[in-house]
Length: 526
View 1 (cartoon, one colour):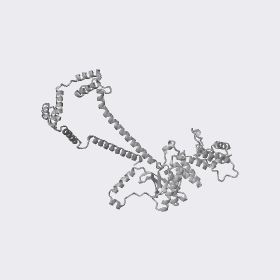
View 2 (view 1 turned 135 degrees about the vertical axis):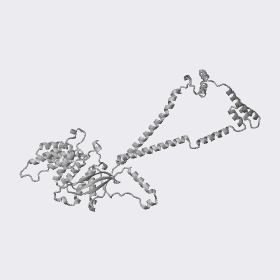
View 3 (view 1 turned 180 degrees about the vertical axis):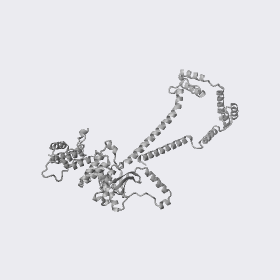
């Protein structure tokens, strides 16, 4: 599973948890509103208790008859109780019964009468009494609308209130659903930022023991050599360093523990599942040695794995790919240990250019960082590195071929351009007696070297950037250019290169001054 699909799985799980939590919360809220089982029967019981409390005492029966509008029977009962000790309620009950009888005998006022009464009261200044009449109108005649002149100024019209009654609940549900979606979106963004923050931490590489070799010394030396090359590249701002360690074994509980506590295996399985969704900062580098091939020589497969041996990427490097194998040479059958050692340098170059170890091509394309030696091609850098080692060992033929392959893979490789140009500047070891001027063959090599330096000696202003200072490669290219003109007996051009170089010698380059060597250029040329 790739890292992106893992992130999606994490976010999906969190969204499902949030939705489940929200649904449970809504159900819980509804249950609170509706009440627990038995609440309705309890309310009925309370109502019966209130009714029993209302009709209590000696006047309980006549009070009940009165409320049921059996006024004749209620009056007889009140009269029988009147004058008896403890039955003072009979007189009050009789008075209340007579009032209810009179009210029941009076015919109810019609809606028009109530409207007219309210208008006359308002016209006379009795606003509160007019409001009481309007309230009676609404209670007794709910189907009759209140006239506009009797409505309060802060009340809505009936038709508009009906529209709001139907629309507002729907709008509120829609608004609450939108708020819930926003909360889920913010939660997803937060989790995504958290995962990005965890993944942005520095990653470490661990080189495991070599696979495919019975030589214990070789299996121990190759990871150390690879880690050393990676550290050197890291100091140049490329990739991460690596540590040499043992292979990680699968975790398993002791039988005594798993037998005594059955859920322990379930817990371990769940922890492993959680670990699969946790960003891992450790990357495992696995080396597998390939036997000698009659056409390609020895080979080594380099693989990047995650800590649970899940492959990320892999490649196989052969001696012949980097000019390290010649089947017709005398040393083709020499000890394999040293030959495998030489393959660790291109292997380190491939690793350093992998995104899993920190290489960020997008940042280079956006101008936030610079490509190492101007190249984003790992193979071009690997050919350059092998050529640089060959040049230090005075193997100019191998160095030249590797620099040419580096430029063929990426013409923007500044290191290959500079080193190849310097290689072409090397004069013949045994010039003819009395030969002062360079030979035609040497002039041809100088011309090739000067052509290679053109791309390195372009001023930043000519590139359209008037604020940038020249970088280190520009200084080295200018210095090499001046020396090439000097060797070609083109003193005027050599002096012009020095004139361009001199004002910039006092400027810092990459927050540090240049080495002493370029500062001696004027003395060497003038």
